[in-house]
Length: 449
Image (cartoon, rainbow, N blue to C red; front, side, top):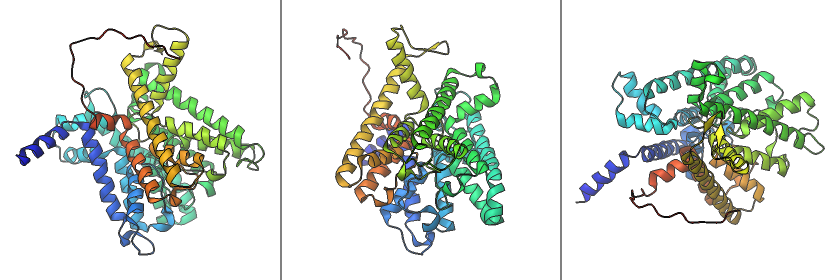
């Protein structure tokens, strides 16, 4: 009888793509954490604490970038290889690796695998799924190789051929996957005036955060007017957020007492755009984030919370979720019958989903920030920054990660996991399925506002 129960539970779980993705990432984090806890992957030959090891594994697998230890100095070359493998698998998604093997063996990809890929890439149709998957793999490899070549122009002369090539590959993968891990020791800060390195990192982060569906449409259609409503909205919101973030960061931090003071006009503009780009998706930094003003920190928290786009390597509630909520709000203010964007209406279902994602994510941020504020004695703005950074899988920190208590590290690690899976996906995976009812209840009148 127990065997039948287990079989039924297994069958029910495997029928739900969201559950498979959730379990897949949990397994990846567990394997990575066990490896990183061994003394064979550290520079000093000593084992890493199990909580710290699992924290780094979760951060790498969930392409976040938060870490309680310095990646460059704590881990040896083998540790760096383990971390970048976790980043690459986490960035592409668990099912990408599972599907790649039968694809290489020229075996047919089953319906169940296609459904899981559909959930992973966050698209609505199974049509052309395998072609999209092939495009994702090829596009990822080519983009990361091209990024590594540009970075090698700087890194090889500076670090020598072998080390320079390795540094180029590591940071290209980390940037494209929006992870933010670095093995330079202090992120991009020492190279903040290097236009080539900063531009390459920014472009990799932006491309990785647009989403594979958007980049494929841009490549094949080559005309903004021919793009889908989804792609147009993603591009519009992405450009708007980068500009608003850069201008906001510049005006807040270029005045007296700001981190841009003394950097010069050109340097300040460049660093402002860099921080605006990476704030939504990756944990790199070109300024000392612990010294930015609280008003600037709040601006970056908002950008992190929004994050990248669906079907990308980035986290957050996503640009389209934010866009739909803004458009719906404007529609209500203008007393329009339905929200319209690019001569297309937005369905009630899309608005409900966007609102659900926003509220679930906001609830997680408030709850985790509250608990950590009780268990750890940091400024609340720093705790809020850390929590949003984790849930949005950004990886930026105001310098409190390594000082978090074990409870704080567990909660932040859980946020990274939820952020990579997606709060809505997790809710759908383990939530109760509503029964179909034939009854339609009369509408209740509720006063709002």
